[in-house]
Amino acid sequence: MRALTLVADRKLELADIARPPAPGPGEVQIRIRAVALNHIDVWGYRGMAFAKRKMPLVVGAEAAGEIAAIGDGVTAFKAGDPVVMYGALTCGVCRACREGRDNLCEDVKGVMGFHVDGFACDLVNLPARLTIPVPAGVAFRDAACAPIAFSTVEHMLFDNARLEAGETVLVHAGGSGIGTAAIQMAKQIGCTVITTVGSDEKGAKAKALGADHVINYRTDRFEGVVRKLTAKKGVDVVFEHVGADTFAGSLLSLKRGGRLVTCGATSGPSATLNLMQLFQQQYRIIGSFGASMRNIRDALAKMQAGLRPVIDTEVPLADFERGLQKLESRDVFGKIVVMF
Ligand SMILES: [Zn+2]
Image (cartoon, rainbow, N blue to C red):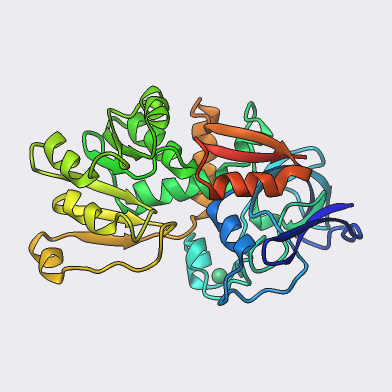
């Protein structure tokens, strides 16, 4: 079967590898139909000194497919069912897993496509407990954006930042995969959305998606514009994932008692923090990584109800690398999806 493997930093190879065995007890075998790209794929592609992994590694961290076969004892699925997969090998038995806080599993065996083999291949065996049904009417290319991008946004905005109707949220990089999802989800519950973009062309697209105010961060200091737009009060919530370039400005954009939630650091991992500002302004800074299985189900339900991911580009498996390079260059508005 086909598998796209990382053989060295910045080197992918389309290989012909052995099919997985028949699924074992409690497992399902999934035929992959679509893989969506995220910044975690770019990090893996560039190489990260601290990431423990063995090459060649099958890439692809976020995907949708259909059940090809089921193992003994699996009753929740049958052949042909469309599914998405939880992309981290959680233990299923620790306290965090039992309480549905899957992304805090105390014995996780790695993120698929990053630490261990991922989804960019024809067939994958996985425990059925990590497999989530896709509701009727949701296409594979859209469903493929649920396990990481859409669920991460769910977890950030609603579990962590506790965003509520009527609040104002600053969404950084409104043209990114998670930025486009955040704009849509915040507007859906009745928030005012301010977003930053790197070009006027992306600004027009963000407005069309529902953003109330768009700031081109290349021509304006976003924190100054946010103060003006909010009559010097600041926003209730900042949705961060840019990191070094924006973190200080993000804190300055918050109102007293505001919440900053972050899941990324695409411009660099380090920032300084004024502790006086932190406690006097009573900010809450919340780190967020991944999502729970519930967040993925909720994201899929929203897709079924009509909230569709913004897809920038669909590419075939052979162009996976070109997709990664496009994502790395930030020349995207929405998601890049690799179709099988
Ligand atoms: Zn666990």
